[in-house]
Image (spheres, rainbow, N blue to C red):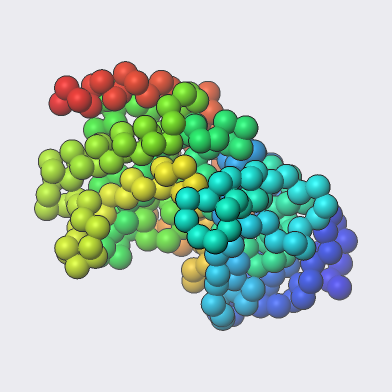
Length: 299
């Protein structure tokens, strides 16, 4: 076993297994990354309901989603039991984040990304953020950046403070921190109304069309990450994409069409962590949603 595993609180199985063949990053590199970034990641996973995306062969094989807690998780792993509306299983015991051991164990199981709910387990189903997922159908991050700046201006008009991050893929995520109160259903309805109005105002650039064929090369505004058990990749989540990119919190001044999200990856992310955190005020910026809901109705 490589010496680096001695500094980890878990035993890594097959630590030298290559997850990113082009770069040579291994499973141990992934686990070590999450160890090193966990203090910064933790506020976004603490007491969060997780959906697992397991990719046991990294970039080389298939992935599968798992909601039920794996039996191999350590005894005492926190879970949240939620009733299912569909399927044969009446309830699901979701893994709840917040522990370093939990995070590293999941990485050891091949969970490359971290998918988090908008609600914490203790307040489910009442979110403490809204998430907008801007997905450029052109495949160009520059289009997502331009759409993000349009969305920021509209959120500013509603007096909502917003925070952008790279999705770790081609898109942009915009988070709006909330005071706990509205249900996931109410937050989702607000998000749907907001993106519908924004797309109607900029029909050549933006769309809310469900059918991919109807989107053209516009940026798809996805509000559905706000459902009660829907998830989004957390800040500081690694993605199963070429170069092992990291979903990276940005300052709005960094949101430019020229930005290449893949430049933030597990190979160099230690340099990013040395810089000022652009989301340092995120949880101090929680805001009530009802005033914004009232403003949106008047538009």
